Length: 290
Ligand SMILES: [Fe+2]
Ligand SMILES: [Fe+2]
Image (tube, rainbow, N blue to C red; front, side):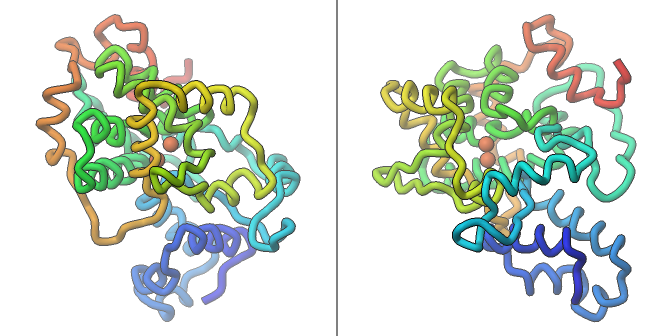
């Protein structure tokens, strides 16, 4: 099976995320089916695959000192090769085709409605993370933090820990918002005591010689000494970035935890006049021109 240059780069990213290329190809219907596709169709299926299974996909390049990862300069050099910026939220972009019409939201949307109708790219990843946290016997707060930790990436990816925490802050315990906010910074720093290593994926996404921004380092240092460090750290420990093909947890599995710890506003998310209501509305209505 042959892929174009850009697709090959994406595939090497998938490999770094321990995604089995053979399983991927057989999932498409086997080599013969794939061989009959034109390059646009291949790009489409690759896009579908990534949309379904991954939320932190990056494009690998060949190069860098290791030959396995790009350098920061190579990552930077890709900026002007795209029509979009990398930090754009999932809802606002389709890599392979025109965007689709979104299903309407109910008048008083709940968290579950957002999961089903808007969190198309992030939901599988966060459900898998929360499921893993549950299997690992984490507290309900950590499980909830895992369930919510990346969902603001539907709106914006830049500083997604801060955005996600802000989105949920009025509705969840402070400890949960803290864990969501700081998972982003902690992801860059290994902690062998918790069995957390620097992710290979980040060498792909940021470049192998990347050093986190000073504000990220400051956030890490603050969180490291905080009484809720363990909660934030456990989000990173249960944060999956590889695709688990046979694990398909459903939101219903977490209904009790959501019921106990998430204060669903009676008016619906986006309509409760909270300081973050407009953020929910922006996720609900990404086609609004202004
Ligand atoms: Fe994250
Ligand atoms: Fe994540």
